[in-house]
Length: 274
Image (cartoon, rainbow, N blue to C red; front, side, top):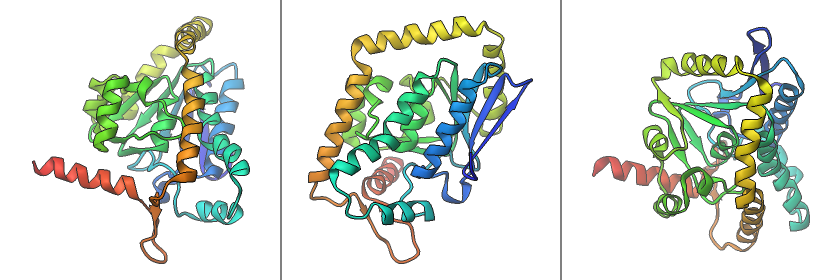
């Protein structure tokens, strides 16, 4: 791990915390931070004492999604300037698809503890966990991103209804739709998440592993991973051929704006005023 992610265990090592520590940048998911997140999950997966893994973000925001303008992002943009699609395809798959498939496949219970906002790449990361708990007031935003788990998270028709509308989903809606397991007051989120994790950690780890394997086996028989990889290819074709800018500058020294996120924010304000 580096300075973007903190790894620690409690309760005699039975519960591991993977904490995103880029509060200054709203825990934006740079390629560098994704590598540290995977390192932390690998450590937890390899530690026989660890029974449950909890993913969280420091500060008021779980994650604002892809990193668009921090020093991490600028360094990667410079390093990959004018890269060919032949290089871009495996690089972005290594950031946006493979890590989430790895986290999803860890044979231990995983929990995402979400507060504030959970936008695009942050949805992908949270979705890779087995169970999601959210704080009241949390806002989720999905699209047809690289790790396109949304139809599996919400169902096909509900996914289309939501994505066509390009709007945020409240924590309560996300729970009603089955994406979030439970919603708690912000000051109780960690307490309630930890209480659940401790109950889970008391169970036989092999039985937990078999439960997870059986559920994933069902999804694999329905084509989960094949769908994720196919959707990723679709996204790369779209990215290579779109005429509409995905992001836009808003002045020197300011973060880049993600065009569709700004539209979703406007839609959210429109819903509030109705």
